Image (cartoon, rainbow, N blue to C red; front, side, top):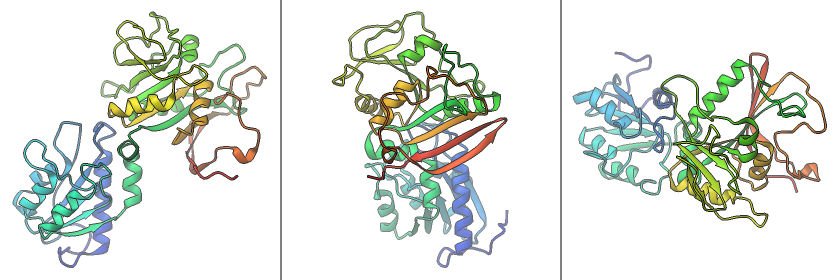
Length: 373
């Protein structure tokens, strides 16, 4: 199959072709749709020595073939003298038969274009050095920003030991998540709720506080079909007040508490307490990180959100806003707690985006760590 770009020779690469095929590798990686956790999402493209597409592939699920393996298998002998495009540094460590870096060397690849280095301490440049030592020409950093955005969960966990934290809530136009009597179903419409289930599918774990469990009795499952990923359900319950009859109690559930105890099929994990007697959220993130969970979706309620924001543990915010007005001084808000005294202390979001979903809007953004003093 001939490409739409001029023929690419490994020793005199066409920059437009590089941009195109690097973007294609990222597009392929996205197909994994978060099913590779705790591994990153990776896509690979191979052009033969004449600049023609020879093979492509992506890492589909954890435990299955890596992207480079798929692409090399499809390319076969045409990989010799060709170029490999991949959104993440090929791994240098052996898995099953060969490392991806060694497989590329053995296949006779002459040039590798990588979007970003792997932040995992087991890799972190080692794969690139292995390729370079074999005489393979390297180009690193093409579409680096897009590659990092794709694997932001993986990068956070591998560099800090803790999962990436997304705070998610649905609220009325006047900032209420329920009426003064506690009614909250449903503030947003079907399109927003489907999008919310997509967030559950994307994350490895989902957390709520005990008050949410006692008030709403949620299941915390993803309802997008049989192939939906079901995140680990985490209930933050400092005093272990949860009832055995709660729908969230079961397998694939972790109850984070400060007390020792048992709760049916759920796993009860005793964690350090804050001076106020609440579960230490940094300790909870450390625990989830040790389990190689890459991401945590915090669904609330307001007190749990306040605790995460107050501790500076939130990386990203996803807020669904419905065009309704609830009112009432006693109606809860998505982030409660004591709040701030000065506007200059407010958490600000960067790289914000607003999308319409039916009648509702979803606002996303990253917490800006640089605040005005």
